[in-house]
Figure 1: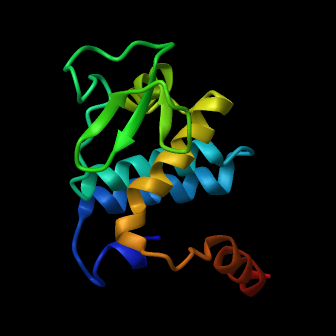
Figure 2: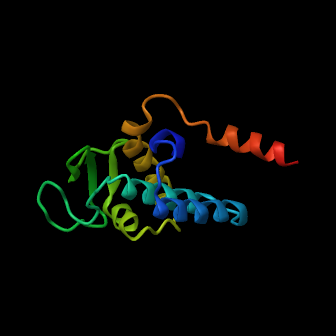
Length: 141
């Protein structure tokens, strides 16, 4: 992921600290999903991907937990009755803002959101993180 979104040898101490925490979490946690989601959101912040998770981009009103919001690139989340891959519940958005990925449904929504948000950086070429991770583990044995 990092090699695709950050130029080689670009100094970024904050990103390095987040990366180290992520690696530690991956090595010690049984459920790595919260660690991965946290790192992806931190990466988006470092990339300057500023999204207001607390307010509706259409009205400026605070996000309402049971309401659904559709993500519009470069605009934010707008209240919507349509439910599709770009739609998220208000409770998910509030959890995103708090970087709280303890709930399964929030983690799934966060994964969906980061895929959408990182797509402009990654293009259509899929990540092969699991494959690279498996190869690295084999080399260590």
